[in-house]
Length: 412
Length: 173
Image (cartoon, rainbow over all chains, first blue to last red; front, side, top):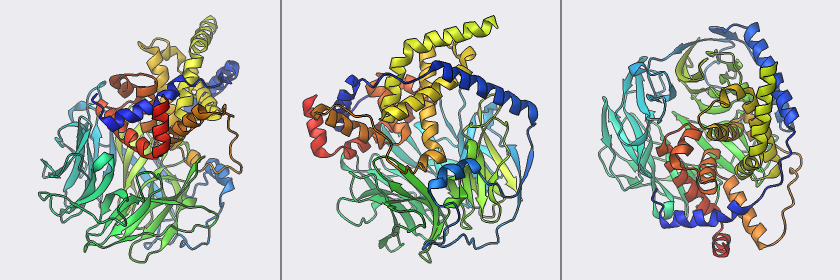
Protein backbone atom coordinates (compact mmCIF):
# COMPACT_ATOMS: atom_id res chain seq x y z
CA UNK A 1 0.00 0.00 0.00
CA UNK A 2 1.21 3.48 -0.80
CA UNK A 3 1.09 5.60 2.31
CA UNK A 4 1.24 9.36 1.90
CA UNK A 5 3.53 11.47 4.02
CA UNK A 6 1.11 12.53 6.70
CA UNK A 7 -0.21 8.99 7.04
CA UNK A 8 3.35 7.69 7.36
CA UNK A 9 4.02 10.24 10.08
CA UNK A 10 1.08 8.92 12.07
CA UNK A 11 2.20 5.33 11.57
CA UNK A 12 5.68 6.29 12.77
CA UNK A 13 4.24 8.11 15.76
CA UNK A 14 2.41 4.96 16.83
CA UNK A 15 5.58 2.90 16.91
CA UNK A 16 6.30 3.40 20.67
CA UNK A 17 3.17 1.36 21.38
CA UNK A 18 4.84 -1.62 19.72
CA UNK A 19 7.27 -1.86 22.61
CA UNK A 20 4.72 -1.54 25.39
CA UNK A 21 4.20 -4.57 27.57
CA UNK A 22 0.83 -4.83 29.24
CA UNK A 23 0.52 -6.50 32.62
CA UNK A 24 0.27 -10.30 32.55
CA UNK A 25 -3.29 -11.40 31.78
CA UNK A 26 -5.46 -12.06 34.79
CA UNK A 27 -7.27 -14.97 33.25
CA UNK A 28 -8.29 -18.14 35.07
CA UNK A 29 -8.58 -20.73 32.33
CA UNK A 30 -10.59 -23.08 34.54
CA UNK A 31 -13.21 -20.34 34.95
CA UNK A 32 -13.19 -19.64 31.22
CA UNK A 33 -13.77 -23.31 30.44
CA UNK A 34 -16.52 -23.63 33.04
CA UNK A 35 -18.30 -20.62 31.55
CA UNK A 36 -17.95 -22.16 28.09
CA UNK A 37 -19.54 -25.41 29.28
CA UNK A 38 -22.37 -23.47 30.93
CA UNK A 39 -23.11 -21.57 27.72
CA UNK A 40 -23.02 -24.78 25.71
CA UNK A 41 -25.67 -26.29 28.01
CA UNK A 42 -27.78 -23.12 27.78
CA UNK A 43 -27.74 -23.11 23.98
CA UNK A 44 -28.68 -26.80 23.85
CA UNK A 45 -31.59 -26.24 26.23
CA UNK A 46 -32.80 -23.27 24.23
CA UNK A 47 -32.56 -25.19 20.98
CA UNK A 48 -34.37 -28.19 22.39
CA UNK A 49 -37.04 -26.21 24.15
CA UNK A 50 -38.29 -23.90 21.48
CA UNK A 51 -38.96 -24.11 17.79
CA UNK A 52 -38.52 -21.09 15.60
CA UNK A 53 -41.62 -18.98 15.50
CA UNK A 54 -42.40 -17.90 11.96
CA UNK A 55 -44.81 -15.29 13.23
CA UNK A 56 -44.35 -13.26 16.36
CA UNK A 57 -47.15 -11.31 17.96
CA UNK A 58 -45.74 -8.83 20.37
CA UNK A 59 -47.27 -6.50 22.84
CA UNK A 60 -44.98 -4.40 25.01
CA UNK A 61 -41.68 -5.96 25.96
CA UNK A 62 -39.68 -4.76 28.90
CA UNK A 63 -36.02 -5.35 28.11
CA UNK A 64 -34.89 -6.02 31.63
CA UNK A 65 -31.30 -6.67 30.66
CA UNK A 66 -30.86 -3.27 29.15
CA UNK A 67 -32.95 -1.47 31.70
CA UNK A 68 -30.86 -2.92 34.50
CA UNK A 69 -27.66 -1.62 33.01
CA UNK A 70 -29.28 1.68 32.33
CA UNK A 71 -30.27 1.94 35.95
CA UNK A 72 -27.87 4.79 36.50
CA UNK A 73 -29.86 6.84 33.99
CA UNK A 74 -33.56 7.69 34.03
CA UNK A 75 -35.74 4.61 34.36
CA UNK A 76 -38.95 6.16 33.13
CA UNK A 77 -39.77 8.42 30.26
CA UNK A 78 -38.56 11.81 31.32
CA UNK A 79 -40.57 14.97 31.30
CA UNK A 80 -38.01 17.42 30.06
CA UNK A 81 -37.38 20.15 27.62
CA UNK A 82 -37.48 17.39 25.05
CA UNK A 83 -41.08 16.62 24.19
CA UNK A 84 -42.62 13.35 25.30
CA UNK A 85 -43.25 10.58 22.86
CA UNK A 86 -45.99 11.92 20.68
CA UNK A 87 -45.80 10.45 17.22
CA UNK A 88 -48.06 12.36 14.89
CA UNK A 89 -49.83 9.26 13.61
CA UNK A 90 -51.59 6.95 16.00
CA UNK A 91 -49.06 4.31 16.94
CA UNK A 92 -50.26 0.71 16.92
CA UNK A 93 -50.76 -1.04 20.24
CA UNK A 94 -49.57 -4.37 18.87
CA UNK A 95 -47.69 -5.48 15.79
CA UNK A 96 -47.61 -8.79 14.00
CA UNK A 97 -44.51 -9.22 11.87
CA UNK A 98 -43.62 -12.03 9.50
CA UNK A 99 -40.14 -12.56 8.09
CA UNK A 100 -39.14 -13.55 4.59
CA UNK A 101 -35.83 -13.93 2.81
CA UNK A 102 -35.26 -11.49 -0.03
CA UNK A 103 -34.15 -13.04 -3.33
CA UNK A 104 -30.45 -12.72 -4.23
CA UNK A 105 -29.18 -13.24 -7.81
CA UNK A 106 -26.80 -15.97 -8.96
CA UNK A 107 -27.60 -18.41 -6.19
CA UNK A 108 -25.68 -16.34 -3.63
CA UNK A 109 -26.94 -16.52 -0.05
CA UNK A 110 -24.77 -14.03 1.87
CA UNK A 111 -26.44 -10.62 1.59
CA UNK A 112 -27.92 -7.79 3.63
CA UNK A 113 -30.24 -4.80 3.35
CA UNK A 114 -28.91 -1.44 4.48
CA UNK A 115 -31.75 0.93 3.57
CA UNK A 116 -34.63 1.88 1.32
CA UNK A 117 -36.90 4.65 0.12
CA UNK A 118 -39.65 5.92 2.46
CA UNK A 119 -42.32 3.74 0.83
CA UNK A 120 -40.32 0.51 1.02
CA UNK A 121 -40.85 -0.11 -2.70
CA UNK A 122 -37.09 0.20 -3.18
CA UNK A 123 -34.62 -1.50 -0.84
CA UNK A 124 -30.87 -1.54 -1.26
CA UNK A 125 -27.97 -3.54 0.08
CA UNK A 126 -25.43 -5.92 -1.29
CA UNK A 127 -24.50 -9.55 -1.66
CA UNK A 128 -21.18 -11.33 -1.27
CA UNK A 129 -20.90 -13.66 -4.25
CA UNK A 130 -17.64 -15.42 -3.36
CA UNK A 131 -17.17 -17.55 -0.31
CA UNK A 132 -13.83 -15.88 0.18
CA UNK A 133 -12.41 -12.67 -1.17
CA UNK A 134 -15.41 -10.51 -0.22
CA UNK A 135 -16.24 -9.13 -3.65
CA UNK A 136 -19.42 -7.23 -2.96
CA UNK A 137 -22.31 -6.88 -5.38
CA UNK A 138 -24.59 -3.87 -4.77
CA UNK A 139 -28.26 -4.80 -5.07
CA UNK A 140 -31.46 -2.83 -5.54
CA UNK A 141 -34.70 -4.64 -4.76
CA UNK A 142 -37.74 -3.17 -6.56
CA UNK A 143 -41.01 -4.56 -5.19
CA UNK A 144 -39.01 -7.49 -3.86
CA UNK A 145 -37.20 -8.26 -7.12
CA UNK A 146 -33.40 -8.03 -6.93
CA UNK A 147 -31.39 -6.08 -9.51
CA UNK A 148 -27.58 -6.04 -9.65
CA UNK A 149 -26.12 -2.52 -9.85
CA UNK A 150 -22.73 -2.37 -11.56
CA UNK A 151 -20.81 0.18 -9.51
CA UNK A 152 -17.12 -0.09 -10.46
CA UNK A 153 -14.24 -0.12 -7.99
CA UNK A 154 -13.55 -1.81 -4.66
CA UNK A 155 -16.07 -2.11 -1.86
CA UNK A 156 -18.98 -0.75 -3.92
CA UNK A 157 -22.10 0.20 -2.02
CA UNK A 158 -25.43 1.95 -2.53
CA UNK A 159 -25.99 4.73 -0.01
CA UNK A 160 -29.53 5.98 -0.67
CA UNK A 161 -32.52 5.61 -2.97
CA UNK A 162 -35.50 7.88 -3.61
CA UNK A 163 -39.16 7.01 -4.06
CA UNK A 164 -38.77 7.58 -7.81
CA UNK A 165 -36.01 4.98 -7.99
CA UNK A 166 -32.89 7.16 -8.31
CA UNK A 167 -29.93 6.14 -6.16
CA UNK A 168 -26.42 7.14 -5.20
CA UNK A 169 -23.51 4.89 -4.38
CA UNK A 170 -19.79 4.90 -3.79
CA UNK A 171 -16.71 2.74 -4.09
CA UNK A 172 -12.99 2.91 -3.58
CA UNK A 173 -10.21 3.03 -6.13
CA UNK A 174 -7.17 2.34 -4.03
CA UNK A 175 -7.69 4.57 -1.04
CA UNK A 176 -9.76 7.18 -2.88
CA UNK A 177 -13.54 7.13 -2.52
CA UNK A 178 -15.71 8.04 -5.50
CA UNK A 179 -19.44 8.81 -5.74
CA UNK A 180 -21.89 7.46 -8.34
CA UNK A 181 -25.44 8.23 -9.50
CA UNK A 182 -27.74 5.37 -10.46
CA UNK A 183 -30.82 5.80 -12.66
CA UNK A 184 -32.72 3.00 -14.42
CA UNK A 185 -29.82 0.69 -13.73
CA UNK A 186 -27.31 3.01 -15.41
CA UNK A 187 -24.35 4.02 -13.24
CA UNK A 188 -22.68 7.42 -13.77
CA UNK A 189 -19.61 8.69 -11.95
CA UNK A 190 -20.24 11.97 -10.16
CA UNK A 191 -18.01 14.89 -11.06
CA UNK A 192 -15.64 16.45 -8.58
CA UNK A 193 -12.16 16.25 -7.14
CA UNK A 194 -10.72 12.97 -5.89
CA UNK A 195 -12.32 11.82 -2.70
CA UNK A 196 -15.74 13.35 -3.46
CA UNK A 197 -18.46 11.01 -2.35
CA UNK A 198 -22.25 11.09 -2.09
CA UNK A 199 -24.32 10.25 0.96
CA UNK A 200 -27.92 11.09 -0.03
CA UNK A 201 -30.14 12.52 -2.77
CA UNK A 202 -33.71 13.73 -3.14
CA UNK A 203 -36.42 13.09 -5.72
CA UNK A 204 -35.36 16.16 -7.72
CA UNK A 205 -31.88 14.69 -8.17
CA UNK A 206 -30.03 17.04 -5.82
CA UNK A 207 -27.15 15.07 -4.28
CA UNK A 208 -25.18 15.80 -1.10
CA UNK A 209 -22.02 14.39 0.41
CA UNK A 210 -18.50 15.32 1.29
CA UNK A 211 -15.05 15.66 -0.16
CA UNK A 212 -11.62 15.31 1.34
CA UNK A 213 -9.92 18.68 1.37
CA UNK A 214 -6.35 19.51 2.33
CA UNK A 215 -4.75 17.11 4.82
CA UNK A 216 -7.74 14.79 4.80
CA UNK A 217 -10.14 17.37 6.21
CA UNK A 218 -13.72 16.73 5.16
CA UNK A 219 -15.81 19.41 3.45
CA UNK A 220 -19.63 19.22 2.88
CA UNK A 221 -20.68 19.43 -0.76
CA UNK A 222 -23.77 19.43 -2.98
CA UNK A 223 -24.39 18.53 -6.63
CA UNK A 224 -27.37 20.53 -7.94
CA UNK A 225 -27.87 17.85 -10.58
CA UNK A 226 -26.27 14.44 -11.11
CA UNK A 227 -24.20 15.88 -13.96
CA UNK A 228 -23.06 19.14 -12.35
CA UNK A 229 -19.82 19.88 -10.51
CA UNK A 230 -20.15 19.82 -6.72
CA UNK A 231 -20.17 23.05 -4.75
CA UNK A 232 -18.99 23.46 -1.17
CA UNK A 233 -21.67 24.20 1.42
CA UNK A 234 -21.14 27.11 3.78
CA UNK A 235 -19.68 26.40 7.20
CA UNK A 236 -20.02 28.29 10.50
CA UNK A 237 -16.30 29.09 10.69
CA UNK A 238 -13.02 28.78 8.82
CA UNK A 239 -11.72 25.71 10.68
CA UNK A 240 -14.94 23.74 10.74
CA UNK A 241 -15.00 20.32 9.11
CA UNK A 242 -17.81 17.96 8.24
CA UNK A 243 -20.05 16.42 5.65
CA UNK A 244 -23.62 16.69 4.39
CA UNK A 245 -25.46 13.52 5.33
CA UNK A 246 -29.07 13.89 4.14
CA UNK A 247 -31.42 15.96 2.00
CA UNK A 248 -35.22 15.99 1.88
CA UNK A 249 -37.53 16.72 -1.04
CA UNK A 250 -37.84 20.38 0.05
CA UNK A 251 -34.11 20.75 -0.59
CA UNK A 252 -33.25 21.11 3.08
CA UNK A 253 -29.87 19.55 3.81
CA UNK A 254 -28.60 18.13 7.09
CA UNK A 255 -24.99 17.48 7.99
CA UNK A 256 -22.54 16.65 10.72
CA UNK A 257 -19.89 19.23 11.48
CA UNK A 258 -17.18 19.83 14.06
CA UNK A 259 -15.49 23.04 15.16
CA UNK A 260 -12.15 21.68 13.98
CA UNK A 261 -10.50 18.50 12.84
CA UNK A 262 -9.04 18.09 16.33
CA UNK A 263 -12.28 17.28 18.12
CA UNK A 264 -14.46 14.19 18.17
CA UNK A 265 -17.51 16.25 19.15
CA UNK A 266 -20.07 16.71 16.39
CA UNK A 267 -22.94 19.09 15.82
CA UNK A 268 -25.85 18.77 13.45
CA UNK A 269 -26.24 21.56 10.92
CA UNK A 270 -29.18 22.42 8.65
CA UNK A 271 -28.68 24.15 5.31
CA UNK A 272 -31.76 25.76 3.78
CA UNK A 273 -32.25 25.64 -0.01
CA UNK A 274 -31.06 29.27 -0.21
CA UNK A 275 -27.69 28.25 1.28
CA UNK A 276 -28.24 29.76 4.73
CA UNK A 277 -27.56 27.50 7.68
CA UNK A 278 -28.31 27.00 11.36
CA UNK A 279 -26.69 24.77 13.94
CA UNK A 280 -29.22 22.65 15.78
CA UNK A 281 -28.80 23.41 19.50
CA UNK A 282 -27.68 20.65 21.82
CA UNK A 283 -30.75 19.16 23.52
CA UNK A 284 -31.52 19.05 27.21
CA UNK A 285 -32.71 15.62 28.31
CA UNK A 286 -34.03 14.76 31.76
CA UNK A 287 -31.56 12.81 33.83
CA UNK A 288 -28.71 13.50 31.44
CA UNK A 289 -26.02 16.05 32.04
CA UNK A 290 -23.08 17.06 29.92
CA UNK A 291 -24.50 16.45 26.45
CA UNK A 292 -21.76 17.72 24.16
CA UNK A 293 -22.38 16.09 20.81
CA UNK A 294 -25.28 15.53 18.43
CA UNK A 295 -25.41 13.17 15.46
CA UNK A 296 -28.15 12.53 12.93
CA UNK A 297 -28.47 9.47 10.78
CA UNK A 298 -31.91 9.55 9.24
CA UNK A 299 -34.03 12.34 7.69
CA UNK A 300 -37.63 11.66 6.72
CA UNK A 301 -39.46 14.80 5.64
CA UNK A 302 -38.75 17.27 8.41
CA UNK A 303 -37.93 14.68 11.06
CA UNK A 304 -34.38 13.83 11.99
CA UNK A 305 -33.65 10.65 13.89
CA UNK A 306 -30.37 10.98 15.71
CA UNK A 307 -28.41 10.66 18.90
CA UNK A 308 -27.23 13.05 21.52
CA UNK A 309 -24.10 11.90 23.28
CA UNK A 310 -22.02 12.63 26.32
CA UNK A 311 -18.42 12.17 25.32
CA UNK A 312 -15.79 11.93 28.06
CA UNK A 313 -12.27 10.60 28.09
CA UNK A 314 -13.61 7.42 29.72
CA UNK A 315 -16.77 6.63 27.86
CA UNK A 316 -19.36 7.82 25.40
CA UNK A 317 -23.04 7.52 26.23
CA UNK A 318 -25.64 7.79 23.47
CA UNK A 319 -29.27 8.90 23.75
CA UNK A 320 -31.56 8.40 20.74
CA UNK A 321 -33.90 11.25 19.89
CA UNK A 322 -35.88 12.86 17.11
CA UNK A 323 -35.78 16.48 16.02
CA UNK A 324 -38.42 18.28 13.99
CA UNK A 325 -36.85 20.78 11.61
CA UNK A 326 -40.16 22.64 11.34
CA UNK A 327 -40.95 23.13 15.02
CA UNK A 328 -37.41 22.95 16.40
CA UNK A 329 -38.54 20.46 19.05
CA UNK A 330 -36.69 17.39 20.26
CA UNK A 331 -38.41 14.15 21.19
CA UNK A 332 -36.58 12.06 23.76
CA UNK A 333 -36.41 8.41 22.60
CA UNK A 334 -33.87 6.99 25.05
CA UNK A 335 -36.52 4.82 26.71
CA UNK A 336 -36.82 2.86 23.44
CA UNK A 337 -33.88 0.71 24.64
CA UNK A 338 -32.85 0.13 21.07
CA UNK A 339 -29.58 0.65 19.22
CA UNK A 340 -31.15 2.79 16.52
CA UNK A 341 -30.10 2.43 12.89
CA UNK A 342 -33.07 4.18 11.27
CA UNK A 343 -36.53 5.55 11.82
CA UNK A 344 -39.46 7.27 10.18
CA UNK A 345 -41.17 10.62 10.59
CA UNK A 346 -43.61 9.10 13.09
CA UNK A 347 -40.66 8.37 15.39
CA UNK A 348 -40.95 4.64 14.86
CA UNK A 349 -37.48 3.20 15.11
CA UNK A 350 -35.57 0.25 13.62
CA UNK A 351 -32.38 -1.25 14.95
CA UNK A 352 -30.94 -3.77 17.29
CA UNK A 353 -32.62 -4.76 20.54
CA UNK A 354 -31.54 -6.93 23.43
CA UNK A 355 -29.28 -9.88 22.66
CA UNK A 356 -28.35 -8.19 19.36
CA UNK A 357 -31.72 -9.14 17.90
CA UNK A 358 -33.46 -7.13 15.16
CA UNK A 359 -36.18 -4.96 16.62
CA UNK A 360 -38.46 -2.02 16.01
CA UNK A 361 -40.03 0.39 18.43
CA UNK A 362 -43.18 2.50 18.42
CA UNK A 363 -44.66 4.51 21.24
CA UNK A 364 -47.72 2.26 21.25
CA UNK A 365 -46.02 -1.12 21.22
CA UNK A 366 -42.75 -0.38 22.90
CA UNK A 367 -39.89 -2.60 21.76
CA UNK A 368 -40.89 -5.33 19.32
CA UNK A 369 -38.33 -8.09 18.79
CA UNK A 370 -38.70 -9.33 15.22
CA UNK A 371 -38.87 -13.02 14.28
CA UNK A 372 -35.50 -14.45 13.25
CA UNK A 373 -34.20 -17.38 11.24
CA UNK A 374 -32.67 -19.06 14.28
CA UNK A 375 -33.11 -18.75 18.01
CA UNK A 376 -29.40 -18.29 18.66
CA UNK A 377 -28.65 -15.22 20.79
CA UNK A 378 -26.06 -12.55 20.01
CA UNK A 379 -25.78 -13.12 16.28
CA UNK A 380 -25.53 -9.40 15.57
CA UNK A 381 -28.70 -9.18 13.50
CA UNK A 382 -30.48 -5.90 12.99
CA UNK A 383 -33.32 -4.11 11.27
CA UNK A 384 -31.81 -1.25 9.29
CA UNK A 385 -34.90 0.17 7.61
CA UNK A 386 -38.53 0.95 8.45
CA UNK A 387 -40.98 2.40 5.93
CA UNK A 388 -43.07 5.52 6.58
CA UNK A 389 -46.21 3.50 7.24
CA UNK A 390 -44.31 0.99 9.35
CA UNK A 391 -45.46 -2.03 7.36
CA UNK A 392 -42.09 -2.82 5.77
CA UNK A 393 -38.95 -3.42 7.81
CA UNK A 394 -35.72 -4.81 6.36
CA UNK A 395 -32.23 -5.72 7.45
CA UNK A 396 -30.03 -8.69 8.07
CA UNK A 397 -30.44 -11.99 9.85
CA UNK A 398 -27.97 -14.83 10.36
CA UNK A 399 -29.18 -18.27 9.32
CA UNK A 400 -28.41 -21.60 11.00
CA UNK A 401 -25.25 -21.94 8.93
CA UNK A 402 -23.94 -18.64 10.26
CA UNK A 403 -24.55 -16.85 6.94
CA UNK A 404 -25.95 -13.30 6.92
CA UNK A 405 -29.15 -13.16 4.87
CA UNK A 406 -31.05 -10.19 3.43
CA UNK A 407 -34.52 -10.22 4.96
CA UNK A 408 -37.75 -8.26 5.00
CA UNK A 409 -40.36 -8.20 7.71
CA UNK A 410 -43.97 -7.35 6.91
CA UNK A 411 -45.75 -5.86 9.90
CA UNK A 412 -49.40 -5.07 10.53
CA UNK B 1 -14.88 -38.50 27.99
CA UNK B 2 -11.42 -39.21 26.74
CA UNK B 3 -12.08 -37.00 23.73
CA UNK B 4 -13.29 -34.14 25.91
CA UNK B 5 -10.21 -34.37 28.09
CA UNK B 6 -8.00 -34.36 25.04
CA UNK B 7 -9.87 -31.34 23.67
CA UNK B 8 -9.44 -29.50 26.94
CA UNK B 9 -5.77 -30.33 27.16
CA UNK B 10 -5.18 -29.13 23.63
CA UNK B 11 -7.13 -25.97 24.32
CA UNK B 12 -5.18 -25.19 27.48
CA UNK B 13 -1.86 -25.90 25.78
CA UNK B 14 -2.70 -23.64 22.85
CA UNK B 15 -4.05 -20.78 24.94
CA UNK B 16 -1.15 -20.84 27.41
CA UNK B 17 1.32 -20.53 24.55
CA UNK B 18 -0.57 -17.58 23.05
CA UNK B 19 -1.79 -15.83 26.17
CA UNK B 20 0.80 -13.06 26.24
CA UNK B 21 0.39 -12.25 22.54
CA UNK B 22 -3.37 -12.25 22.82
CA UNK B 23 -3.25 -10.00 25.87
CA UNK B 24 -1.09 -7.57 23.90
CA UNK B 25 -3.68 -7.51 21.12
CA UNK B 26 -6.59 -6.93 23.50
CA UNK B 27 -4.62 -4.24 25.31
CA UNK B 28 -3.92 -2.40 22.07
CA UNK B 29 -7.58 -2.65 21.09
CA UNK B 30 -8.99 -1.58 24.47
CA UNK B 31 -6.35 0.81 25.74
CA UNK B 32 -6.67 -0.23 29.38
CA UNK B 33 -5.82 -3.32 31.39
CA UNK B 34 -9.22 -4.12 32.83
CA UNK B 35 -11.10 -4.05 29.59
CA UNK B 36 -8.28 -5.94 27.91
CA UNK B 37 -8.63 -8.76 30.45
CA UNK B 38 -12.43 -8.73 30.09
CA UNK B 39 -12.17 -8.90 26.31
CA UNK B 40 -9.58 -11.67 26.48
CA UNK B 41 -11.75 -13.70 28.84
CA UNK B 42 -14.81 -13.36 26.60
CA UNK B 43 -12.84 -14.22 23.45
CA UNK B 44 -11.26 -17.27 25.09
CA UNK B 45 -14.71 -18.44 26.23
CA UNK B 46 -15.95 -18.22 22.65
CA UNK B 47 -12.84 -20.05 21.47
CA UNK B 48 -13.51 -22.80 24.00
CA UNK B 49 -17.08 -23.16 22.71
CA UNK B 50 -15.80 -23.54 19.16
CA UNK B 51 -12.59 -25.38 19.96
CA UNK B 52 -13.42 -28.63 18.17
CA UNK B 53 -13.87 -26.69 14.94
CA UNK B 54 -11.15 -24.17 15.61
CA UNK B 55 -8.37 -26.69 16.34
CA UNK B 56 -8.70 -27.97 12.77
CA UNK B 57 -8.63 -24.53 11.17
CA UNK B 58 -5.94 -24.04 8.54
CA UNK B 59 -4.86 -20.81 10.20
CA UNK B 60 -5.67 -21.17 13.86
CA UNK B 61 -3.90 -17.99 14.93
CA UNK B 62 -5.87 -15.97 12.37
CA UNK B 63 -9.07 -17.66 13.53
CA UNK B 64 -8.37 -16.70 17.12
CA UNK B 65 -7.42 -13.14 16.22
CA UNK B 66 -10.72 -12.90 14.36
CA UNK B 67 -12.60 -13.99 17.46
CA UNK B 68 -10.78 -11.37 19.55
CA UNK B 69 -11.28 -8.52 17.10
CA UNK B 70 -14.89 -9.32 16.28
CA UNK B 71 -15.72 -9.74 19.95
CA UNK B 72 -14.21 -6.33 20.58
CA UNK B 73 -16.24 -4.74 17.78
CA UNK B 74 -19.40 -6.53 18.91
CA UNK B 75 -18.92 -5.33 22.46
CA UNK B 76 -18.61 -1.73 21.34
CA UNK B 77 -21.82 -2.09 19.31
CA UNK B 78 -23.93 -3.27 22.22
CA UNK B 79 -26.32 -0.71 23.65
CA UNK B 80 -25.19 -1.46 27.18
CA UNK B 81 -21.62 -0.72 26.21
CA UNK B 82 -22.60 2.63 24.85
CA UNK B 83 -24.58 3.59 27.92
CA UNK B 84 -22.06 2.53 30.51
CA UNK B 85 -22.50 5.51 32.76
CA UNK B 86 -20.04 4.83 35.49
CA UNK B 87 -20.82 6.21 38.92
CA UNK B 88 -17.10 6.44 39.38
CA UNK B 89 -14.31 6.49 36.89
CA UNK B 90 -13.04 2.93 36.33
CA UNK B 91 -9.81 2.21 38.09
CA UNK B 92 -6.90 2.72 35.77
CA UNK B 93 -3.61 0.95 35.79
CA UNK B 94 -0.94 3.20 37.17
CA UNK B 95 1.49 3.75 34.37
CA UNK B 96 5.12 4.46 35.06
CA UNK B 97 5.78 8.17 35.10
CA UNK B 98 7.97 9.88 32.55
CA UNK B 99 7.76 11.45 29.13
CA UNK B 100 7.60 8.12 27.31
CA UNK B 101 4.68 6.97 29.42
CA UNK B 102 2.88 10.27 28.85
CA UNK B 103 3.45 10.08 25.11
CA UNK B 104 2.21 6.51 25.01
CA UNK B 105 -0.84 7.45 27.05
CA UNK B 106 -1.59 10.19 24.52
CA UNK B 107 -1.30 7.67 21.69
CA UNK B 108 -3.52 5.12 23.44
CA UNK B 109 -6.13 7.77 24.20
CA UNK B 110 -6.18 8.86 20.56
CA UNK B 111 -6.49 5.23 19.43
CA UNK B 112 -9.35 4.68 21.84
CA UNK B 113 -11.27 7.55 20.27
CA UNK B 114 -11.38 5.84 16.88
CA UNK B 115 -14.41 3.78 15.88
CA UNK B 116 -13.78 0.12 16.76
CA UNK B 117 -13.36 -0.99 13.15
CA UNK B 118 -10.79 1.68 12.32
CA UNK B 119 -8.95 0.98 15.55
CA UNK B 120 -8.81 -2.75 14.81
CA UNK B 121 -7.45 -2.16 11.31
CA UNK B 122 -4.71 0.16 12.52
CA UNK B 123 -3.72 -2.05 15.44
CA UNK B 124 -3.55 -5.15 13.27
CA UNK B 125 -1.72 -3.51 10.37
CA UNK B 126 0.73 -1.23 12.07
CA UNK B 127 1.21 -2.65 15.56
CA UNK B 128 0.82 -6.36 14.86
CA UNK B 129 2.22 -6.34 11.29
CA UNK B 130 -0.72 -8.24 9.81
CA UNK B 131 -0.91 -7.87 5.99
CA UNK B 132 -3.91 -6.16 4.40
CA UNK B 133 -5.43 -9.31 2.92
CA UNK B 134 -5.22 -11.10 6.26
CA UNK B 135 -6.77 -8.13 8.09
CA UNK B 136 -9.62 -8.37 5.59
CA UNK B 137 -10.08 -12.05 6.38
CA UNK B 138 -9.97 -11.38 10.12
CA UNK B 139 -12.57 -8.63 9.91
CA UNK B 140 -14.68 -10.38 7.29
CA UNK B 141 -14.55 -7.48 4.87
CA UNK B 142 -12.88 -6.55 1.59
CA UNK B 143 -9.33 -5.29 1.22
CA UNK B 144 -10.91 -2.08 -0.09
CA UNK B 145 -12.72 -1.65 3.19
CA UNK B 146 -9.50 -2.29 5.11
CA UNK B 147 -7.74 0.39 3.08
CA UNK B 148 -10.53 2.89 3.50
CA UNK B 149 -10.77 2.18 7.23
CA UNK B 150 -7.01 2.64 7.43
CA UNK B 151 -7.13 5.92 5.58
CA UNK B 152 -10.00 7.33 7.62
CA UNK B 153 -8.48 6.03 10.85
CA UNK B 154 -5.07 7.56 10.21
CA UNK B 155 -6.62 10.88 9.20
CA UNK B 156 -8.71 10.90 12.38
CA UNK B 157 -5.71 9.90 14.49
CA UNK B 158 -3.63 12.68 13.06
CA UNK B 159 -6.23 15.23 14.01
CA UNK B 160 -6.83 13.74 17.44
CA UNK B 161 -3.21 13.89 18.37
CA UNK B 162 -2.47 17.36 19.51
CA UNK B 163 0.11 18.90 17.22
CA UNK B 164 2.64 19.40 19.99
CA UNK B 165 2.24 15.94 21.46
CA UNK B 166 2.30 14.47 18.01
CA UNK B 167 5.54 16.24 17.16
CA UNK B 168 7.07 15.28 20.50
CA UNK B 169 6.08 11.66 20.12
CA UNK B 170 7.43 11.49 16.61
CA UNK B 171 10.70 13.14 17.61
CA UNK B 172 11.31 10.84 20.55
CA UNK B 173 10.93 7.58 18.70
